[in-house]
Amino acid sequence: MAKNRMEKIAGYEDKISKLKEQMKTEMQKQKKDERNNRTKRLCTRHGLMEKLMPDLINITDEQFETFVKTGINTSYGKKRLAEIIAQSKESIPQTHTDYAETAEGGTSANP
Image 1 (spheres, helix red, strand yellow):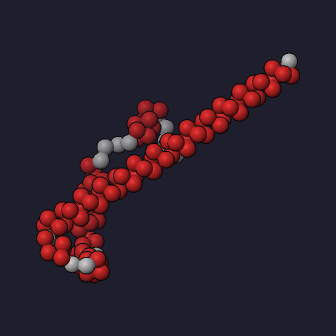
Image 2: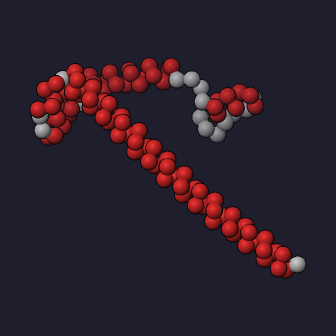
């Protein structure tokens, strides 16, 4: 009977190591997806800026940083961004946790 338990323990250890490897693989895939999404977002947004303002192509990175800091990162720019974010939050549907909360009639730990 002791051997049977040792075999069970060994089987559990094998399962644990396989699950850890699967978790590591999934985490790597998630990080890669996040990097790809960020790269796409940066390229799309900067491409739009260059499309709207073709002269941006001819300036240095330092000049572009100055342009952003003085032209976009102003109180008006921050105000407009806050308005856009507020509008987008109003149009976002409820999350699945909100639906679960409604279905159960209780409150969720995630606000």
